[in-house]
Amino acid sequence: MLLPPRRQKGLHFPAERSVSAEVADGGLGVTSKKLGKACLSAMVRRVVESGERARGAQELLKLGRFDEAMDIAYEIEPLLYEANHLLQSASLLRRVGEDFLKGKSKST
Image (cartoon, rainbow, N blue to C red):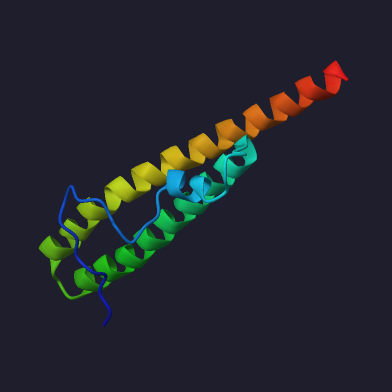
């Protein structure tokens, strides 16, 4: 049985790249499309990690190890919360980009 690695509460995850680091790699020409893509990429990583950990918690529940499964659930919750905010940011950025393009086409 493969269980997800345990993390201490309140610590950042050094293996994960932040959205700002992904955008910085793109250079100075940061557009709302690049920011939106970075937000979506980060969101997907968090959802995938949450799913992997949830499967581990499910296995623990089958074995009757409720307390350990509950610990994992508490650790997953901030990842899902962050994923939700990243999705909202990506959606807003997409709308900003569309509005910008509409305004640009009207001015020409």
